[in-house]
Image: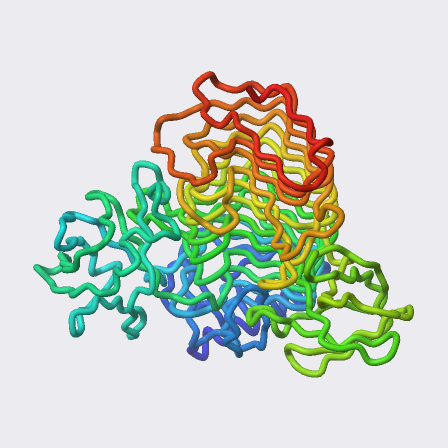
Length: 605
């Protein structure tokens, strides 16, 4: 920084600090960076954040234009992100910690990032609003290619070498990102006309199971031939999205914070989860979108999920948001259960975070209510409160509870923190063409999903629960799904996609009573191309009424589930007053286990 510019910045800060009262709005320009400058904006942003910390109630404005950030000028922090690879220390561009009553307004500004970097972190802060930004990578961390020919001997791809630099080495197609040559570990096939995943591809693979046996050659600059007898061929005109990145940095990370609002944001790309919130409360996201920029030829946006809520509490509100081109679910709301490894005395449990992407998380605080879970049945066998908690390393800790525990389940136990569970409202949003499912939600508190449109290539809504694999715990007790439109969902094969709405907890050995409770599916419109509409396992208390089932011939049926409705190990089910199209083929109902005499199905013939 030149001496006169440095002096200008210092003078600006002094003037801000001595003004009485301090201005309620300041511009990032006053801290030494202007829109359109190509140098890294990180140092100027850090000075501005320090000013916000010293002056609660201030709005920091970024005038419209481009601001650049890269890992060289970023700050390093040890952060453990839920459902994310551990790559500490992480490089962070905009790091907000210990702030109160702060606003950062982009006014349409673009934040442009380079390489592996976490754009925005909000930690240990209260009453924060981020609005009006577009977040992107000029060189995204994925690549794509248009299919221009496909025959029995291989496929020909058109690749834009300016946006997606590539090279060919010993017959392998490698994409170049910040000097690294990366081999795709997967391809996804997108149909430009649908703005989503091509039907019947998904996790079954758009090139077949043996696709890595190809030999690549360059026919001319930007034209690449992959010679191989692929067991499945993509369609000419479709786009293959090459996945060669890792899930290491979210687009925005919120931790140990409260009353955070995200407003009018456009995420064009992220290098991992889109917006990850963990151990935070009262979160509101309005007009936040994951989608390529208008006029862009990109078919992808985020590398993984859009919104991910892990171990949050209070109220989560998502309104008027949209999701296109994600490589995983649009929204995922869950807790994190931990395995009980041993018991030391009547009140002390030795516990472990079991999944490699959950190590380093905080499990709870003294006073938090715990559910003790029988892992084989996933049923709660009682509750207790944390009296003390002691961490031994990033994966292991001890919990002392407030009462004697005379015995634990013989098949193994897990703990779920019931205090860190949210009420959830998701409304008026568009779950467009993404790789997997639309909404995953598991919280014991109230969930309302209303007036949305779902077009995901997997299940539109999944309600799961697990204490044996991912350890994403959570039985639901109050879910209302009403006045939504489900349009051509579940057109490819994914886990937890047994139907358009899939209630599929991972229970190794069902217990004597249902796992999930009180789910209502009311007044929705399903426009289906296949048979299965609802699949429910281990549910007690389910109503499905007032829904319309319409039929579209846009895609060919493929799903192996031949029943419109499935109820397994369930009870107290009421299906009535639904209207089915005469051409709907899913009129059969499967009922097994549970209490079949309490499953009352009407108006489904």
